[in-house]
Amino acid sequence: MARDQELDLVEVAPLANPPVCRIMNYGKYRYEEAQRAKESRRKSTNISIKEMKYRPKIGQGDFDTKTRKIAEFLGEGHKVKVTIMFRGREMQHQELGLKILDRVAEAVVNVAKVEAQAKVDGRNMVMVLAPDKKKNPPKANHAPKHAGHHPDPSSVASTDDEPAEAPSEAASEAPTSTAPVDTPDGTEPTPDA
Image (tube, rainbow, N blue to C red; front, side, top):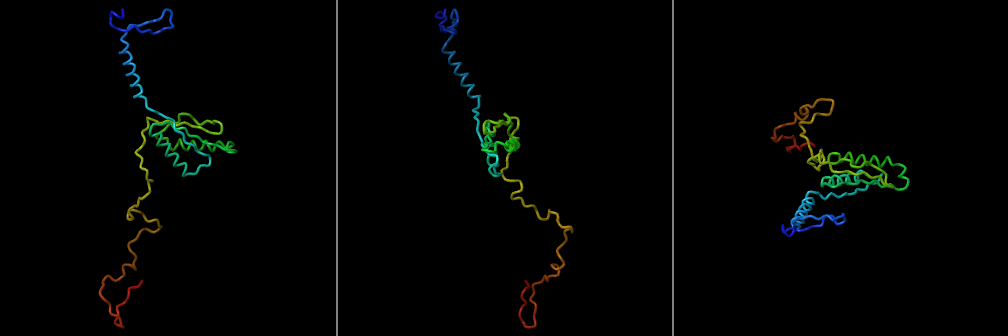
């Protein structure tokens, strides 16, 4: 039958009793399978898990740097495993690790969601963050809000109890002309400091 239709006879289930065969164009079948596999690879994004390690006594500068890097990873579509490493007696104060993980989650709340809550794994505490596709990251301006901002002095209100006044009376009494003044000894007076 396969030769009459100029098709191939393909054994589908060799272990069945009796074996199951199918008449088909095997070359076309393999081509379509390859196309489906290629399409599925194209649609799937290559998501990897990055890891960022913290210590319970981390300084503010290091915390900010590592958290910024986590936000970058999440922005690129990666998942991030946040690890708090405990040493020695620090295991007795796991609440410090929880505080750090909460601060990290709060810092990246606009681009991430907590996929796996904090749990203790040996001497480490681990939390997994995943990018949140529902939330769009804001257009980040990396400069601090107040850096380089100099308000117009005329728009700033006086901080003293007295309202801002016009120039003082001493300044208004200063001579406005630049004509030379005669002195008794015939020399020009020098301006006072």
